[in-house]
Image (tube, rainbow, N blue to C red; front, side):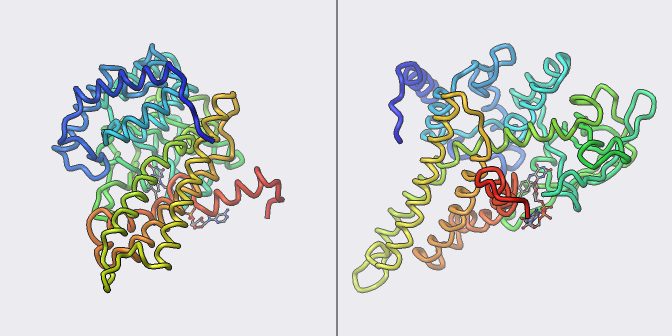
Length: 385
Ligand SMILES: Cc1cc2nc3c(=O)[nH]c(=O)nc-3n(C[C@H](O)[C@H](O)[C@H](O)COP(=O)(O)OP(=O)(O)OC[C@H]3O[C@@H](n4cnc5c(N)ncnc54)[C@H](O)[C@@H]3O)c2cc1C
């Protein structure tokens, strides 16, 4: 399947490519929010503001919240051009992709006007407070409690694995508000100001040396009642729409993966293995490289299928679990093949970092086993085990 892009998205491509050529400076190319030190983070925040001012920070958002109401093909073109230019995205990695859509769907008009423009510019940084030490895949087991006391909820408990929690000043927090209800029904969603007394963030440094994650502790934190997102005790519905948007982002994942595969193929042609031969001449390595190349191309076909479905009005369903699965497993296979091709050099620099980081991608946003359960039940129609 290959798309011939219609005229309109191609016109958008020229316009956006021109804007990037004028605005993106070399020091920003390839920079990542996840691994950035404070000074770098501020440079990225400035870049985020420039994107927002030109209405390029979230082009799919409605114009009234700072977007362009862009269609699917413009969104595809946008991702391709950002990738081609190695332009960093917005600093609100979690906020824009996961939390804003939930606010748009479930928020009051006041919440939308208050939070969305600041989120778009990166003025506020948001994190997602869902997982707990004993509630990950089985999220509905969460225990962090919120008890109504006059005009406030009093929040107590612990969250973990909170991406960007150390930089965030706002948190989309899932809490238990009715302990007597069945576990999916007694949960609510709060939009919590992280500067409130009783909120403590403890950073977790990952094996890559990066500060991405945190634990967040809540000790008698008084959160105003207006912080409720969606109806009381219907936080599960809010959480599910948030996660559906998270999984929908998988349509762009092939862009980074396929260019890494091409980089490795080029390196294989230059890496000597003795006797005047290169890694690309070795029949076993050739087979491994061909396999990882095909997996990445398969991911592109899955993305095209998702885009085609969206163009025909088909909602993103459990197919996103297939794309997530293929992407995350191919990332790990690529790290392994890089090790075979490059030898000890694969433990250093970007290849070393990516190989180690790839262990996380089969966990984040739904683990491999949980996605396989979704595929078994909802696509293959197999019974629950
Ligand atoms: C990079 C990254 C970023 C993250 N960011 C955030 C964030 O910003 N906010 C947040 O709240 N959380 C975040 N998380 C947490 C993430 O959502 C959880 O790690 C994930 O849901 C899995 O939960 P868990 O770690 O508790 O593992 P568990 O759920 O305890 O799973 C342990 C093992 O059991 C398997 N398993 C569990 N249930 C089943 C089942 N029903 N059938 C078969 N096997 C099963 C799992 O696949 C896994 O192998 C992040 C995680 C990562 C890795």
